[in-house]
Image 1 (cartoon, rainbow, N blue to C red):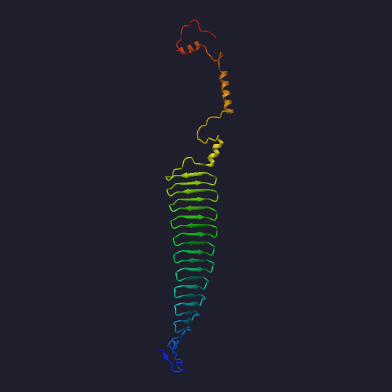
Image 2: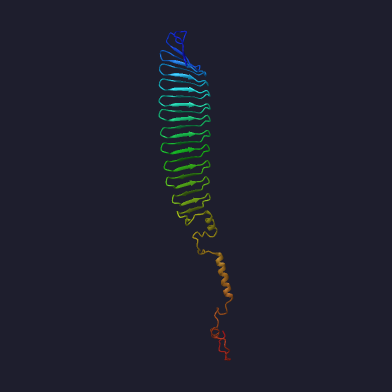
Length: 299
């Protein structure tokens, strides 16, 4: 049980009316007539308070703090951390590693990391962040956002589901809210796709392939390889037989050779055989006949 000192300056109360009390655990406290006071704990902690409601304290571990009559205050931790707070709800804090953050009365805040990272946040839900490597991102209250990579990549996204992306090598892509998209490669290739499943692709060499929504390949594909073959075979771009050109040396040579062969096989007289000879051949049924006078005319 605490013992109260004797009245008087030499005892537990001084001429000003303060009262000092020693408690069973060894702690002491002093209360002044004006409402202020102090205490000392058995563990070495101590504190003061004033008539207005403010005060200060020091913990046994070396931490300390102050507070005012309005509800504000500050503190310092034994580990080196520190902070402050206000009656309106705003606050700040720095931890022992050097990371810090602050918050205002409306719920907006910011932070800085000991590693160089930083960021902000707003009461409406928007935010921004930059990490220690230089990558950053931000977002607004509606759900739209963007980001940038330390390697040069970047992108954005919208609340409706659309997005864009560019990587560090120069390849890029976009997608809209309906699921349609397109892309471009750093090598010159490109393509697109639709929500219905159709797509097209052009590679770096200029070859193009397209598919419809049912997965069928489109007709008349424009391929650089096909064009090269067409050129090698007379540019038969129609895919059918083209008539020979009028000035066709090989064709003329073949025609001349055929004409020579026909001429060498013709009989005298312009190739006309005896009419009777043809007649005999036509009427010869293979039955032996009696010899008759030869009435054929020899030409």
